[in-house]
Image (spheres, rainbow, N blue to C red):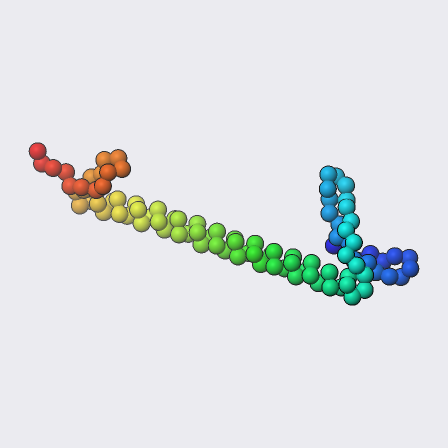
Length: 99
């Protein structure tokens, strides 16, 4: 996204994108229309950055919750074993029978 100044002294706002190894320019306008397009693109870029930051924070929080869940499960298993319970495969915890 850039303003281009031509030989006639006017400025024009273009969006440049790469497609298949070639640069494609899309014209958005000059004057006030170009300024509005420029501001809209800048706002869109800022919003995208904010969304990415929020996603990163949520991913970090999710990782912490998963880690805390794992620790809680390990503590539960250790406590159940300490109190004499056993668990075979995916069956529920139970006390062994004496027999």
